[in-house]
Image 1 (spheres, rainbow, N blue to C red):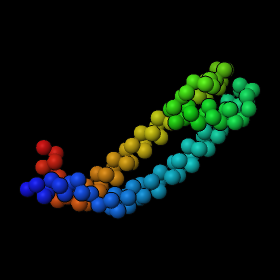
Image 2 (cartoon, rainbow, N blue to C red; image 1 turned 45 degrees about the vertical axis):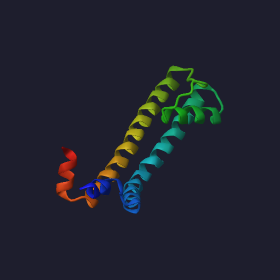
Image 3 (tube, helix red, strand yellow; image 1 turned 120 degrees about the vertical axis):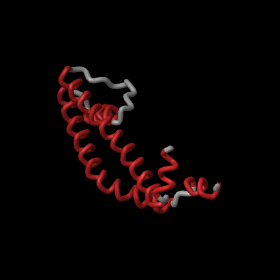
Image 4 (tube, one colour; image 1 turned 180 degrees about the vertical axis):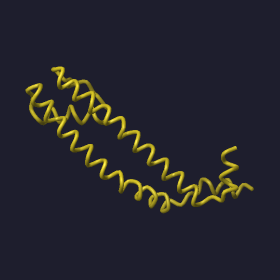
Length: 123
């Protein structure tokens, strides 16, 4: 019986990477959209706050990735609205990455374990 439990931990790395690649291929389009939204948000922040594009791009990026160092903050209400929008988009993107990663792990387990073993894991 110990051999079956060890089997759970001996996931095939190549199978996991294959499953991740399948899901991340579709996520790539979402990533491109996120980058476009960050650049557009940076343009708006640059215009609204009258700051250099590099600084507004930095602000937009750290806001969208939900890091938020606080060294740059939006000055106008319009740029604050853009920052909130970027933060929400960043949270959605982060949640998507986590969901896709766990789905790939679930699919890998499903491909490697029998239905009986999966039921035993649920209990």
